[in-house]
Image (cartoon, rainbow, N blue to C red; front, side):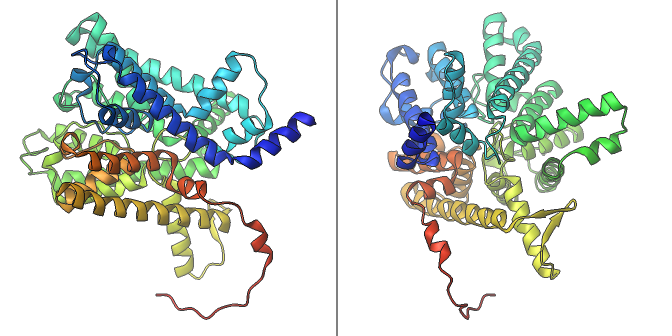
Length: 462
């Protein structure tokens, strides 16, 4: 009882949100210090603090925007540091801390369990350690499979040593939705017609971004389906409502995004115009997938039409799904707001999906996330325009990519001034830990005010 009391007493001094935010910040500065070591760079010189901090931030925040070429500027040691930072960013510092606790055989305090619960946005602390172990094991297995499949292509192309390293780096980067690679200056553009590279990369991105909750639900129901010999129709019925919505939204956004890219870029000579019909379709699907916080590119981002750039900003803002490696406001957030809007139009008192009611507390949270995220993103766009003197379209693409932790750029990241780098770093950091979390960091609880009941005001909207 004493340990629980002490944990709760300590917890009052610093909330779990504050611990998570500070943990990420500490990891970023530690990574920057390591990247400044002379052995981390090809020329053996000390990398500037600005460049090291930006690279560490984009790695920890699994974004992928870079101011120096990853394959050319950093040695194997530097690239290894970056890969470790990406993996930490994908798992989260709280998860890494928990893994160390497990490795050392330490017991998890109540405060640590609450931290894990808050980080993964779960409803209960029951079974947290088991959930955590499944997350780590599942992630490492998927990354290992991805690396093995990449080796089929990269070992014959680069040789055994570099081929294995490039495969591991790409697999971890893709699964963590980081978008960084050590292949060359053109991301995956040289592989725009390579079915293996495209399919493996898209599969890793989607698996990382769809969320661990969906993973485990599908695995559990699939196991029961095989055991009881249910039909595919019954498998779908047995999935929980969250998994059903996430799967449908993921497929819908990928298909809608791919169709838009295909239409807007069909005759564009700078992107998919010169490609065959099959390659156009594959490149469009890949672009739609990578818009959702991945950052890899098989076509020239600077050559996209204005319509495609706008579609990209929307998809980057939405991002992936909850409790995964992707960024953005998340698919369920936008879905809940849309559901509430349609319920109001149809004069429904409750928001119901798959026979389940969506709570108003969830709607309020989704509203707050969108409000804070969009406000911060637009402010950063304005600041970047004034700082760098670039077009609104290029600035918007860069900032939406940063706050959505995507990593796609129209070729302006490397030329950013120090002020521009700070703006983008703020966007990446806010996108990884969530703008709502940043707002909560500077606020304290005032739940006692909820007990006060005020008279209804006469306000007008619309």
